[in-house]
Image (cartoon, rainbow, N blue to C red; front, side):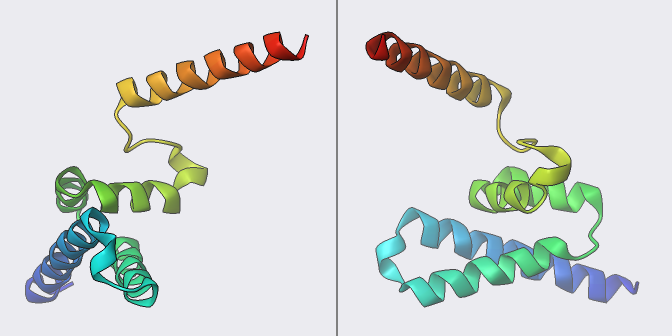
Length: 106
């Protein structure tokens, strides 16, 4: 692929990922259809063949896009973009909740 075309695709992903961050931070600023359009555009851009280092840089800088990417590839990589501490904490909280619900049921 020609360098200018690749550069353009990376720049488009960065711009749309940043827009998704802004919209995610303040969802009342756009309607549901506009939000869905942004999400679908980011999904399309994340589906393109990009250099791994560029993709990882965008995902580190833009948590909403990282979550979207993770959900797109959950079947292959699980919660690979989620910080391990947060994933462990969530799992432990869920386990405790289930234990307390079981205790109440008995």
